[in-house]
Image (tube, rainbow, N blue to C red; front, side):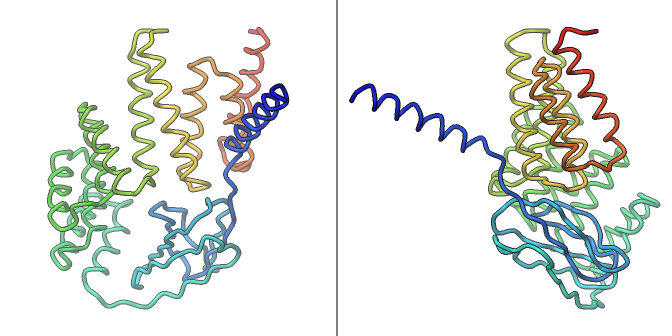
Length: 305
């Protein structure tokens, strides 16, 4: 009897472990709205609708989400995305004449053309609408892109007065601190972003992953410190990927994670990550390079040069 119970317990443990390691199920949706509408899910940008007003999103995780859309000349709209929602999701936008929102949209258009003019337009949007958090965050990003890090931090400090617990702002602050070499403060900011986002903040998880990856690469080779930093990097990059799904930022994170595993000589795990990348993004320009990574890793595993 005791032998039977031991056998049963062992099977139960192995079964539970296998279940825990299964890939989280995902679902596909098609967002239908105005042409060229930007689409976010839980704050993650998935792209823009086409000329036909449609955007196909092949993989989002289960659970209730927040779907947000913005299009030039229209009022931004957010709505819940039910845990079971899949297939076509129609979002009707309403035209806007609100000056602050229109100025913000102008700034967004200028961002890829003239960052200085974009920054000025964001400031005007904030004057017209002082509590408009997205304008502050976008302005901070633009100032950071202009290498105006002090100005970017000043913008975030101003935002804290009108929106003291903003997960995206904390993630942006973490990136600023990391780029400025203040790693411990950056880690604190990233972790605060995750708390403020109630566990969902892929930008912050990515920031942590890259920070620890950098620390690992700067550590003594084959040291316990290096191993610990690589482990932290891997853990955080995996969470970021899980939360990003098939968002446009995901491909580069797959490559960071794969490289991180390669440097730990975890070749089988790296191959698995690259294969998952190819399943999710088979038609990307990076696909051929990723296939070559797999070939080279298999050679290394077989002791070939």
